[in-house]
Amino acid sequence: MKRIVIVLLLLLFSALVGGYYLTKSLERSELQPKPLYPTEIYASKVKPLVQNWASDAELILAYGSEYCQQILCDLHPMPSPCICNDSASGDGKAPQWTFVFYSKQKRELMKVDAYIVQKDKKIKWHVVSKTYRTPLDYSNLSMSLSNPPENHAIRPRTYMLFRNQWKSSIGSLNITSTNSTEFKRLILAESKSPAVYRGVLILPDGKIGDLRSPSVIIRTQLNKTHDVLTAVYPGTVLKAYIPRLPYKLTSLENYSRSISTIIKRLTSSEFSELKLIPGQPYAYYELANGTIKIETLDCEFEVEGTEVKGACRTR
Figure 1: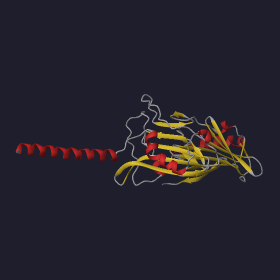
Figure 2 (figure 1 turned 45 degrees about the vertical axis):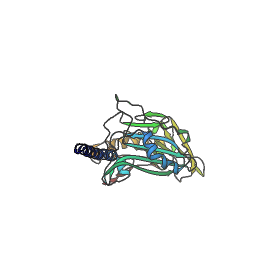
Figure 3 (figure 1 turned 90 degrees about the vertical axis):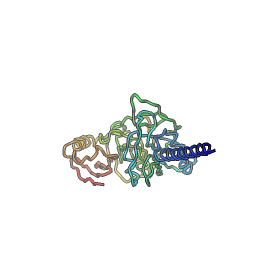
């Protein structure tokens, strides 16, 4: 009888110990979320937000990064930094995903950032969404979400779904490739991760500061009451008619000399210590009325001819 009692006590003790370690294991797995496929994070975290926002929401861009991009933490400040724990490069999973959706009914873009953070002593997926009014119709860029193909040989580290194709990068455009000679305002917008600038989608650019970008915004005059806003992306062009902006038309040819001067100035030793463009997550080059204005996250400069004015701000 005593032997049976001892055996039962041992079994009960083993069950308690096993249950304890099982619970801790489950808690540990919950505290340490792993990189996910885009379809997984979309189904569990993003889909409810999008459905509550617009019934006609269409996906136009998905972007994931397997290495730590502090940009998302800069955009959405948290008590603790982003957590990057992706050790399997090239598997199509990532600890950071960004989705951009378009609603024709609302005439809006919704950008959703999902990434792993540590908050209140817990590590978990954090999701932030923001909507933007847009004059452009992005319906023809709508696509179905899928998972990127695995590629352990090349290990792309970044995944971008655009126009129904998964790529690790998108080719850049320059000012002259836009075929626009007369404009009121022309903007080259560069960003390390997807962004929305003045209601226009900005595609990720791997080379910040080369005055080339996969996203070009051009505003030209249509008539006395309206302008034409054109967004140029590799392989596609979107246009919208918007109220007139009181700027004089500018010839693109007039900027050819000043652009070359700016490039030389920005790459000279004079600006190397400031790190005006390289290394910054965002850079916008706006050309209008004889002035080229350069905006980054930390700096604002105005360039007229060979004269550069401005200053960098520290965070």
